[in-house]
Length: 325
Image (cartoon, rainbow, N blue to C red; front, top):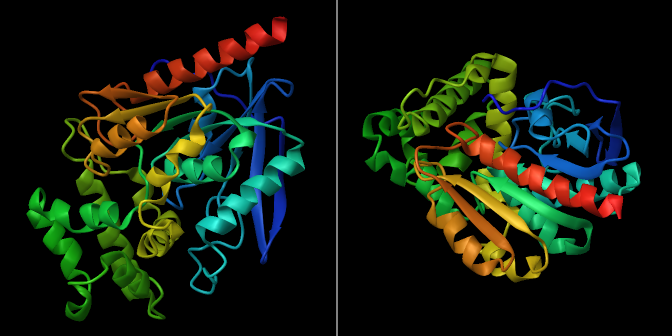
């Protein structure tokens, strides 16, 4: 991506005690007096890597990144078999965001979210619309049971060989049920070899889902055993519970986003989240604009990132114009 802004380092960082024994890593980058923006990373469990900083003009934005509970630099690490995941849920994450906003003295902020981060952004904005100025979401999901069945079961019609390996990594008794829940049980097994096989099988399926886009390569992060275990324990934990959202909750609550400008950026070739998800959301959210990228899949490649940057630049320009008045 040639249009990314230059690499920058945080001007502030810390560990926020959010309760339940969790410390959440956060950092602020860019202009300390700029337009506040919050990054909500995907996964769940991917962590807020430095790459996210480069979507924002550092002269305009005060960008806040944080690692959601259990991943990245936050503690305890969900990849540790001894870490209890019962206090790692969507309501806990939404409460963490509010604690972070208050801790940093921010009144309102723009939200940038991708994949799972888009669902988290929608959930936060529907509960706290007065705290959100704009939203830029890409690879949009709403974390419904139907979406999770699609990605873990129905996509086997497109990738039958890979899906059969994915399914058969689960004991026969669990193959016809909730596959994320079955994987979550394997990833909690006391035997390390059982956990490792499950994590590898899950990540191989994740890689298969992006292989429909020419030039796609396996995600190198999955080669790191520590990342692989943290990521798979969290993503299966969340998907097994459909993100703790009621079925259809985020679509049903889209009307509460009225007055919040939004840009939804999505690849037509995104198999992980079919395009009808952002399409339906754009019909229910009065102030959202849908940007479809014909040759793009899931993530920021093939021009998705450029459209995200364009949207952030436009919102930043509006902020500058108001600031000059």
